[in-house]
Amino acid sequence: MSKIIKNNVDLDNQVSAEEFLSWEFNKLKEENGRDVSGLIESIKDFGFATPVFIWKNKNDVTYVLDGTGRSLAVKQMLADGYEFESIPFVEIIADTKKRAMELVPSINSNFGEVTRDSFIKFSQGLNLNFNKIKIDGISSTILANEEFSYRDKNKEISIGGHGRSSGGGSEKGGDDNYNEDGFKTCPQCGYELSSE
Image (cartoon, rainbow, N blue to C red; front, side, top):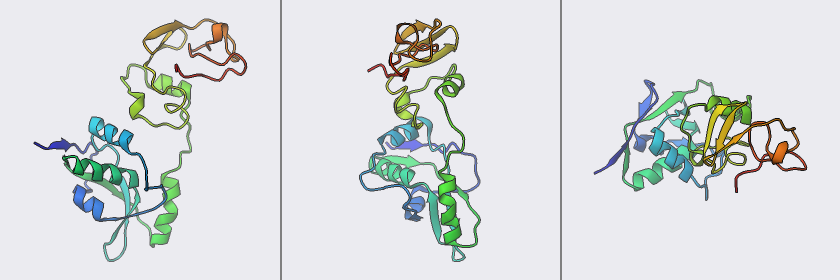
């Protein structure tokens, strides 16, 4: 019995996993030795939720601008017996392959910043597994492997199942080395520490 991965993107542009893997991929992100286990777990949990970005030349040859990690995950998942409803894609319009490739860094750029505080507010009431999320500077360092739920910024935050009331406290460590949001901090510099 096969395991079907849903396509959770509502786009007219969709292809089979096999066709997706037949396309030419950019080499912006390292492919050799890359660990895509977190991405695979995310796809298992949420389906295929992010389209790949492509460009087609005048002969209809398809070049994937952004999707190398997803291609590695799809290859591994197909080998493990998964099937995909379809792979969603967005076609970028550019006159040349060179111009399309020049767009790749902008597709991969983040001009906004996800901060710890903005992530706390965003995640209110959500059931998130930080082992399956990668946000630079947030899940990989500050909230890694911690059970986390936002209750009220000025009342209680649960970390690892232990609520901590947030009392006053300064930015540099606060009372008992917890900051105002209830996160354990370094007493010298105020840097937020993981629960490990």
